[in-house]
Image: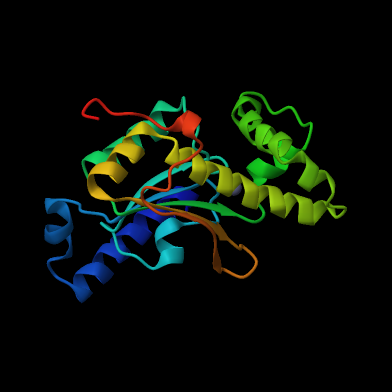
Amino acid sequence: MEAYKRLLLNNQAWVKDKLAVRPDFFERTSETQKPEFLWIGCSDSRVPAEDITGVEPGELFVHRNVANMVVHTDFNMLSVVQYAVEVLKVQHIIVCGHYGCGGIKTALSRQHLGLINKWLRHVKDIYRFHATELDAIPDDEARYERLIELNVFEQVHHLAELSFVQLAWKQERRPTLHGWIYDIHTGHLKQIAKIDPGQLPHEIYVYEFPDE
Ligand SMILES: [Zn+2]
């Protein structure tokens, strides 16, 4: 059997399972979505957002890219966040990185892999911001894991720098921003950053809105 056919067969079995538990499952989920969470994760195949958090379809709005980045000129990510915040009105945004991240590993190297190097340049910047701390870590693996954590920390802070996040904070005291790491060795999630609504970033990033 060709590999892709397994996915289509799995789908048939999945539909059966869902209907066995709840006959109206698809009627219910096809009407609308009202997810409470936006998940920004890595594209890595080993970090399936719904599986590791035990949620059902309809609960997570998801954006994934290599190394779970929040890049201010990325209109794909920006559109997802803006829609999630202003239209879906999510209560929480979670940036989830993971140990063993190939994107971060590549950013630490001098490997030239083409276009992806442009994307991972943002990770090299984070290394440079934290070079004093990272250069002082003698063990390569420990330095790599620390960069994974610092990357999540910085991406969560990037969210706080977005005008539409600040506006939602001001008007509706949401969303809360979270930075998590998924440990691919144990399956556990670890919280490493949390920014509550109204916890503004450095004043250079703070916007004044017209009604002020
Ligand atoms: Zn990754």
